[in-house]
Image (cartoon, rainbow, N blue to C red; front, side):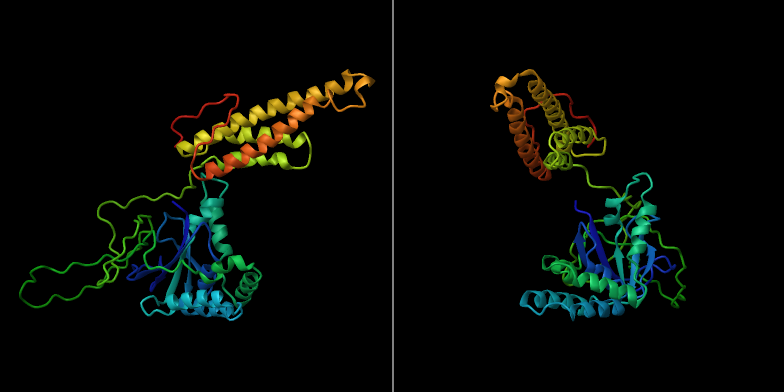
Length: 370
C-alpha cells in the first residue's frame, strides 16, 4: 500500500469536544504532500489531533475559503498553456462544488512524515516538527510557498494543481459522528424533551477503514465500525531489497579501487539489515549481500595481484601491457558486470521480483522477517 497525504473537508475543529458531523474526502496524493495540499490549508493554519492515526499524531487544519483564495493566487501566476489551464479548471471544479465546500480543510500528513523518521521507537517528535514546518499562519509564509512553487519545473505542475487527485472516496475515512437510528415504533404520548449532546472528547484512536464508494442516491455515511476500533499503526513500507542493490552503484564513484571496495562493504552491510521486509525483499537483500562480498573479495585479490605483478615482473615486460595487466583487466570486466548486476537487481527488486546472480553463498535469508 502506498503512503498518502489525505485532504478532507470538515465543519468542526478536531479536538474541540464536538464530534465531526460532516467529513468529505477531497483529495489524496501518494508518497508526498503536494504543494496544492499545503496551500489549501494555509488559511489560518494550525495543528490539530489526527482523526485517522493514534495520538499524538497531528494533522493540519486551515480555513476553506482562505486556502482556496491562496491557491487562486498561485493559479493566477501559472502559465496559460492549454494543459495547465485544464488542470486548473479540474481543481476549481472540485473546490467550487457546493457538495465539497465547508468551513475547514483538514490535511492528514502523518502517513507521509513517518517515512522520514530516524527513530522508529519514538517517531512522533520528528513527525511533529515536520508538521509544524508546514503550518502557514501569515501572508509572508504563504508568499514564500507560492514563490517556491513557481520555481518548480514544468514536470511537477501536477503537484501545484492536484490534477488527477480530486476524489470524494479516499483510502481512509476519518472519525465521524455516529448516525442515530430512529425508533422503529415510537411510543404514544408527549414528545420527549431533546437532550443536549454531551460534550465528549473525540477519540482520535485510529480505526480507519478503506472507503467504499457510497450509493449514488445517498450521501456518504460516516458511522464508526462496530465493535472495538481497529488499531492502525504508522509503519514504514516493508523493504524490497532495491536499496541494497542500488548501493552497488557506489562503484561508479571516480576513485578507482577505493569505490569498488566501499561498494562491496556497503552492499554487504546493508544486505544484512534486520529491518522488516517482504519475503522477496529479504531474499533480494540477502542476494545483494552475497554479491557484494563476492565483489569485495574478488576486487581485493585482483588489486593485490596487480600490485604484486608490478613488483615481480622485471623490465622485460615493462614495455607491454600483458601479463602485468591481466589482473586489472579481469577486475575491470568484473566491475562492469557488477554495475550491470546492480542496475538489474535494483529494477527487479523495485518490482518485487527476486534477483539472484551467481555469487558466493555466505548468507541465507532470515526467517520470519516479513
